[in-house]
Image: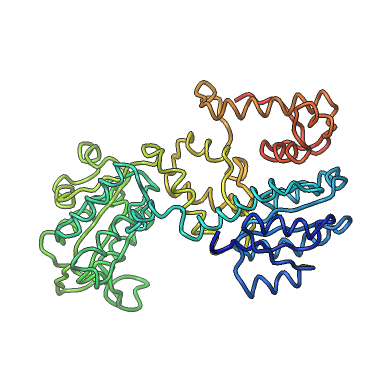
Length: 457
């Protein structure tokens, strides 16, 4: 390769180091050898590297704490080389799985190391280039979506933004109605003026009128000074009334009058004030049904619903769930020092199956929670607070079937061999390193740490 990938190697492989370095260089790598973590830290600060190998000295497991700090603050993937005997310690294996992309026992197979490091370098390159660049092209409204229904939504937002008329935004709780309202404002001719959002459902009934229309000093007990209402604060710009369906009937009359006459009257005032503002509104309730039941004025409904934007629930855009989860993961990882690198396949599968009653808001909260709770490199379903439900057992993908079969084979082999990892690995025809990795993947540990049971999903 013309521009050789740089490989940082910390410590000694405890074999013929010169042969290993020469072999990796023959395969296109530029090796940066560091005798210890102090030197490695300096080398990382001095030059960019594409992947790293850490050679763990026997009995020096305490070094992993310092290594963890280096991994967290580096932007590349690492693998560890350990002595065969060290793999008898399940706690060490768990720590290695948490910190490193992979770990191998010595002596090493140079072709296998080369393959793993090529994969590590490719992962760094993907992150560097932005592996989710295509979805991010559709994130111009801070709303991510690749499915047709979202592309239609983006087009609708562009269209209604150019027309200075009231817009009604319909969608379930947590779908991103305020984001849509902000997007409309920012692409309208009022973009340089204020955007004021009011949640009508969060205000006590006795304060809503004062909050929206303002009051004069002494207008009522406690009104010690004049207060500008939110409608007036949005003058020249956009007023977003969220959860408009919760507005009391008596205040609906005042809002209708403002929409018709473009004037307001503060509580306790004599004069009316002209206010030029565009009104956007939203609700998660069925306003047409509320009109039929007499809970919402029909004339106000038609005044608000000149243009309409409908936001689909997350369950209707299953193809976007993985893209969204990774988008928020990338966003949150900038705010947190962590060695978590992404989602396990099990977590991604369950996220696609989950019905997401809280929509985008729930997804954001679960991803944020998972990044705090995760103690390994990949987020598991338990970190997200998701579990397999009995209702999903009749619907199973080929991927799930393979995972279930693999997990059952591991459990059976471990049970037959009384949890002796070496014997179980020999029976399954895999190395102990591979077996440990599979045990971590399926959240299985050695006897005494966690009870293992056959999968039932």
